[in-house]
Amino acid sequence: MRTDISTLPRSCGVYIFRSRDDIPIYIGKAVDIQARVRSHFTDRRSSKEILLQELTDEVTWISVASEMEALVLEDTLIKRYQPRYNVRLKDGKSYPYIVITRERYPSMVHVRGIERQLGDHYGPHGDPRAVRRSMRWLRKIFPVRSCRRDMNKPSRPCLEYHLGRCLAPCKGDVDEEDYRVAVEGLVKFLSGKRSSLTKTLERKMWDASAGRDFERAAMIRDILGGLERVRSSQKVVLLKGGYVDVISFTDDLSHASIVEVRDGRVADVVPFSLEGERATSDVGEEFISSFYAISGYVPPRIVISPPIMEVERRTELAQFLSAKAGSRVVIRGPRGAQERSLVEMAIRNAHMFSRRSSFVLDSEESILSLKSSLGLENIPLRIEGFDISHLSGTNTVASMVQFIKGKPRKSSYRRFRIRTSGNDDLTSMREAVFRRYRRIRESDGDMPDLVLIDGGKGQLNAALSAYDELGLGEHPPTIGLAKKEEEIYVEGRMEPLKLKRSDPGLKLLQRVRDEAHRFAVSYQRKTRTVDRSVLEEIEGIGKKRAMRILSSYRSLDEIRDLGTAELKRRCSIPAKTAVAIIKYLDGK
Image 1 (tube, rainbow, N blue to C red):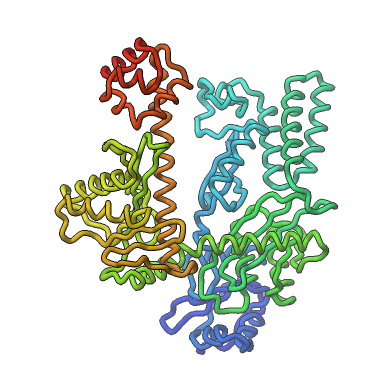
Image 2 (tube, rainbow, N blue to C red):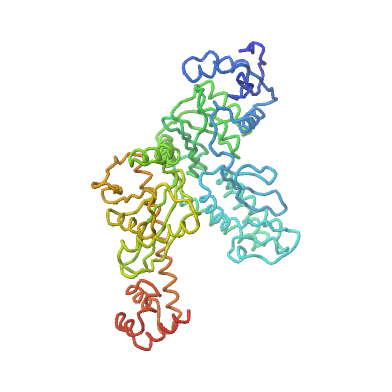
């Protein structure tokens, strides 16, 4: 290595390991740059650490004035250079945050990533849908606006005001003090300061009441009521209360989970996927450093398990985080039964997230396994799956879902209302496959690499007969997957193929099959609702009679085609009502 370690500064800052091509391969921070870099080159316990030492040609550094500056600079440089041997939060830049904007009348908005100029960020959070749900009930407690309207131009309030979820400062007559009370309460709630929030609001409520400002007192009373409902619904995990984050990792250090406890209650569980070669022994330090660099709040206590950080590194990292928090931060292992139960929760969630994401991460393995097991000529990069859904033979529909490289492409999903008569799944499958590939042939589109039919040999033969009718001599490889024993029926094979339940190729087929089933069932329910609402528009037909009529027919078209006499006989309804139904449907 060209750099003499003894020439490095003994000050706080960031150091960069560079390869012979001058490419940053590892970035770290330290209170004492020289001592920290020296420790890297004396650590020979890890083969990956040794590899990093061999690849480093030069060490450069940037000295800064404080630990806080070092923490922020390290995060900025890692995001910029994406060093190979740094642990990085996967898609960290797109994690959802709740933002309170800096305006005369602040609004609460949902963003992905950091937009510092917008306002104060609270997060990152784990699930975008959970964030949106949280914002909906937060506005019920703290009626703060969520729109981007210009507050300098009075306008008509929107529906949120009439639902009691916004004070509507857009009207131009809202007292700024009332609005500030709601915003301050929301900020304290998001910061986890819920006990002090309750005391502050109670004091303001009694002050407003004593000053005969009963409207403000009533508003604060409603906020306190909402806080109590939230408090009673949360699980108490620490008898003495407290603010703590519990961080755990999977065994392979590929995933992490943070259980956030605020005011003695679990406030959120945030899972993360970790990227990078994880060459150094500082996985825990790097993850914690990256997370709190983008987090708006650092708790006074951070519990980490398993104890993958040395005491010296833990102490130094706590020093960095204390500078950001503005108060003392302690990083240690779990103590007591309650903290250990939180660790178990974090570990359980990390492993669940790992299993959930492993399918996507291993999609290449699944596709290659499928090619080998089925003896396919081409890699099945594009798979299309079909399923049929009906209710007692009525309202039969079919679905087609498409997976590209093991992932669903929902924009390419298709659904079919089956037109052929009879309640035969085989006939319905034949029609759906015929219509799908007739359209592709007519538009000169590309055929899939594999077609999956939900069902056994009968359903597979129905699909093959659709190809024959279309005149497709060279049709896509097509298989059937029977649910009971997960047997795979392959064209040209007498006996079904059975793969191990753990086979990645079978898991991919199951996911395609299950997604086709979900899509078909949701469409079938929708068609019945639409048909029932159409019948209910006719005089003399209510909800029960409409459902009875639909249970006897496959669709509204079949009712129209069979005529008045058959409708009267089959559904036991008056002739006058049957005539009215047919007349109404003929006019549609």
